[in-house]
Length: 271
Length: 268
Image (cartoon, each protein chain N blue to C red):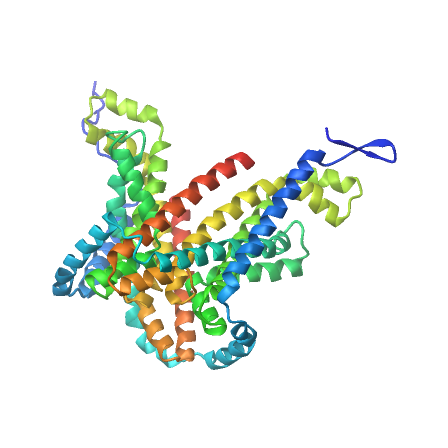
């Protein structure tokens, strides 16, 4: 127990002297790192713009209200596109993620040293890159439009769904697999009758969860030209039509809240 | 004597949706939606076909990344992204600790609780990219707007999880400290802080990781960082430089994820 001396008497202390020193050194290092990063980051910052910011904020704020309610008439179609991007993208991601997950799970992978690392690399690569970056790439490759958005959302979803799904596969109860194997079932039959029923609830939960995230992400994909309501946002921003921007923000917020509600309901019903 | 009829055939029961009517309704609805949705997707197949050659060039660029030609730009973008990540995480954590304590039902009075929860809800509802658009309009282009965006996003994420963690603490320890006549600050310091500190460190590291990933994105709307460099590279159709940048992002994210999971294990 750490003990210090107080008025010649031994007294309890929270930490030993060495621990306290190490703690201070750690904090000092963190502060030094922060100050260093701050200096490097703000090297090229134009402070006049920063000082100007409250004024700018007030100016933009005054132009943002009231929202252009009538602009809603032109938002229904992009909203439908956004919904399609999220849903079809999720579907595409799931379809590719299922085999990847079975290849990556330790108990179902056909080869531990070849297939599993490849599957894990696919998962990591898909997860590290945000869907907006995928969209940026795809718009330049297959051209602007809803299709690029769907593929971008799909590519981003693979890693997420596959990671959670392969963790679920690794956690299944092996006795059921053994029981089905003991009846003389083939590999595909084992997957169908022993593994699928065990992971299906988790799978449905993951899919709905990802769909919810995808709705959120697909609202902004249009900023780089990949279709949906983000296209309108970009157009309104380009002409500085701030009241239309507010209207779009309201629609995006409402969509996100509704999708979150739907996904919570569905997941509650499944689990 | 009649024998009871044994079933000789087994029909697999449906797994997820038990009620047949619901099942058919949901399948039918999904089918109708799919037809409508796929029907409304307009694809310019000629453009896609023309794009295949570019896609191939991108894959080639990814396999043979070019780090050297644009290294100066990549270096600036990386430094901006990394410094932005560190500063915004530190500031975000510093602000989210008091808000997290305020949003914990067992510590804060109702008024403070509601205010803090409102701040959290606001920060979580808006996506980083939307905040970045607004902040770039107010503070001008560059990493400073990105720093503010990431700090704001960090607050919502960390405060919420910290508040939930504080609400889940072992109340017996808090009661024991209270019984010694400790003040509110002493209660926080000796009863709450030791219980939530490991998780707070873990969450901060996790957020550091997320902030780096996000810093690669908000550059697209002008908030500095590696995203701006990537955007430029793709706009110039320099797929080998773009491949290099994406590889760098993947490597840094992997390294951050790996090391943060190690530190988290060590802390807990």
